[in-house]
Amino acid sequence: MIQSIENNLDILARFSHDTPEIGVADIANKLCLCKGTVLRLLSTRQQGNLVVQIPPYQKYRLAPKILELASIFLSHLGWRMIAIPHLKDLRDNADETVTVFIIEGNERICIEKFDSSHGIRPVLNLGGRYPHPCRSGREVAFGLPLTRDAQRNSIPDGSSPAYSSHDYHPQGDRA
Image (cartoon, rainbow, N blue to C red; front, side):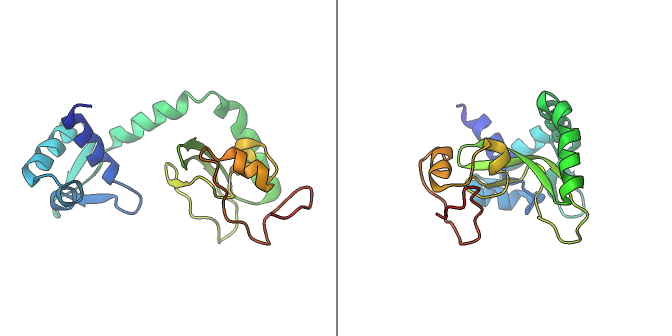
């Protein structure tokens, strides 16, 4: 891949729910690039409306164009129009938060979330990346019972996640 494109992607990847705003020096240090290069790349991203500069702090954040691109991605997931009413019904009937993830490598990305009415609920962000072998979302994503063999077969690298005495197993067997 052309180094400039790779650097641009690396800069965009620095933004997260934990770091929604980031400065030139922080990016330069994390990516081992000189500040001038980072500033030039950010300026190009700013012209493309992908980032905006926050004047008083000289930091950058993602621009609304990113949301536009994300909505294009989500609008082409055909299952959503059919599934959303059912997911909302599931949330309403169970009074639990319902989430939908896509799997990418050893991570899962939250692409849909319907919160319960509980005051305390899972803190999951749309677009957030979470470890792949977690309990939440696995039953719906794979439609598999939570036995050790089923879990091992559903994880690409064949590893087995940690189990506790509270894991649910429909057949009553424990890992």
